[in-house]
Amino acid sequence: MTVKKALVQADLAAVDDIGWAVRLLAATPTHEHRDPELLRRWARAADAFGSALAPVACGARIVERDGGLELGLLARYTSRPPTVELYTDTVELAERVVDARGWRDWYPPGSVRAAALAHEAVHVHLHHGPAKAALKRALGHSALRLGRLRVPGHVAGAEEVAAHAYARTVCGLGRSPLLLTAALAAETGHGAETETRTGSAAGSTPPPARDARREN
Ligand SMILES: [Zn+2]
Image (cartoon, rainbow, N blue to C red; front, top):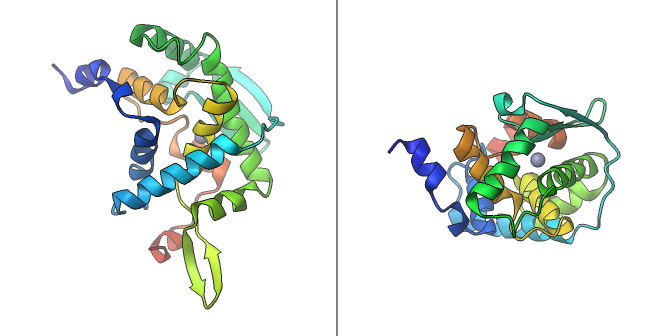
């Protein structure tokens, strides 16, 4: 059996939502050597933050297109101008994967599209409002300590975890869309992400490399 086939057949659902969130963080640059327990704490905090977010309207323009499978994308947010791109071919594959894996109770018909839009709405929200600082505070990661002044640090990938948790909650899904993206990744051989790293970065402004070195 090839590695790809093994992944396709693996019981991905045996890993819980926090477990997938930890995997997402662990696979994100700057976290390669982090303590797994710290990653788990961040995963829980980001998941709780996303789950508790009040519903946010997506003010961005929505563009539907295909070509997502080739790019390994379900949807992405680009900030200039604020646009959510929804890749219909990937959405359709995701719906087929839900049926093939017997996950329809967790992801009702049409919920892939709804979850993708909800996910991207969080990126829009965090990009334009004060919620980004609130997420940093929730994570409690201090990048700098100057006497009593604590400067909340950036935790790469945390926004992704929060966006997936928000989508799970507002769309009433039985499991996080993170599980579905893992199944899509197994299906297509692409990484298990809603966006590429650059797509994600457009929504979340990545930390400059020097920040990554300064954090500990
Ligand atoms: Zn995202």
